[in-house]
Image (cartoon, rainbow over all chains, first blue to last red):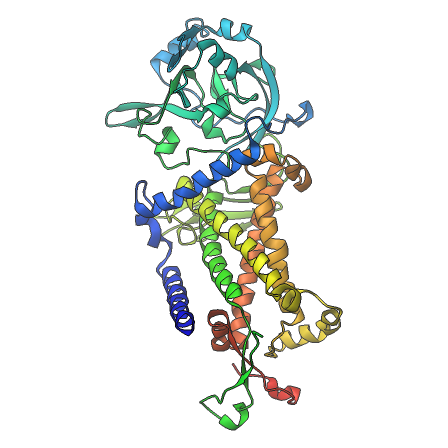
Length: 263
Length: 293
């Protein structure tokens, strides 16, 4: 027992000396150990999995995000990320008011779909006034109208091995040596089938503006903004992240964000 | 049972005056272990939290952030002036020049616009994603430790014996304030009134409030506990409280360290590392307990 006391004492003394050493040397001390794929970072990222499981356990499948009243809509929805895609394909579709735009539903489905805006708008819709929370820290309340994603998935008949919905977007978010990177992201089937998860084409009673993702964007109300891609043109059912960008499940995820954006 | 007092002659100056001093076992292993886990966790949570804050160095009151109306109560920013770029901090509409620290900072000639300076954030460069990984990892550690401490302190009597406020504490408060102001410290088994208030305030008010406001900012937790944000005044108010509690915790840390230095850092550190604490000689004139640290 006494031996244990001493060794722990030594440990704690060493730990506190070490910690003060770190403070003195400045906070770039950790920089090199925090890059994606490093051992320390991968260890710390385990907490994200814990958060995901804990929140799924607590929230279940259908707990609803808070909804607000018309009086809470005090300003236009704040746009973020790409607000005016410079892509020729997108600009061509926009020039024609998206008459030639289609939403493709493909991957692990029995019946691949190609839906026009009219077809989507003729399906049952859901309107919700919700708070958009950006990962940066700000919030903005707006009214969204769209087609529940679950209805689209039902129509396409999801295969049992499918685990995630991958969103393909028309906007170039980044450029790399191998070419333009268009925005992409994934959510699991629990969020995909959540009652408030819609493919939104309307914002505050008007057609969705370009800056907010026209003609169609995702609303995943229990997660942060980066999990709700804009400028959608394809929904692909996948069984993993192997063929999703860099393999972490989304554009921002490949750049260090958590795949789970519920916190 | 834990407070086995033993007499121990202390080597050093004036052995005659110190021979009555006793070492007591003051801090249980649970208190010591949780203390150091909190210290480490709070260090990383603070520096990663300031990095997260830098992504949007503004605080608002209400459910949302005012872009077309003004509900900003705190902002850090940079602006171009005739004298070059300057950093500023704005609190309730009052603007202060904080160039070099807040808003505009960095090595000479390489200053950049950033909320908190590089030396106060982890990572040192701008990286919101990594800061979130660190922040949430230590959020789990901190919260788990708080629960472990609460259970252990209930079971081993630390709560009831050392922290629970008594009527006596109220009576002693004025004298206690005077003693602290004079840096006159009594080294006893018991915490004094101000200590109880400070430790109790951190453990039962500030840390729980930090956890609650943290949870209130999570959109997923809002679906589980929708009343949280209503109670707190909206998500952006919750974020503002989260930040304010951080400032209070930093203030606690500074006072905590100053008190340790003033009360005798060797003895204080020994008690939080090994548990053993040297108390003042019993039954002596009050004046002689004044220490010269």
